[in-house]
Image (cartoon, rainbow, N blue to C red):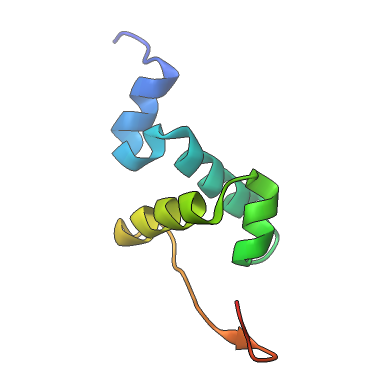
Length: 77
């Protein structure tokens, strides 16, 4: 069997993870000791709010992560 290139391996694992931003989101979350809030993930990845939100929504739609929305001290988190 011919060895796979990294991009081919990722595509065979899950097509959404072939995108470097989505892979970075999943790697950052996997390395975290506890769930991360949106702001912490935003700072860790240096993305725009819209970009991070769109990628997270795609990952949630695929069942790869869960987004929980809650209020802490009357502020959304």
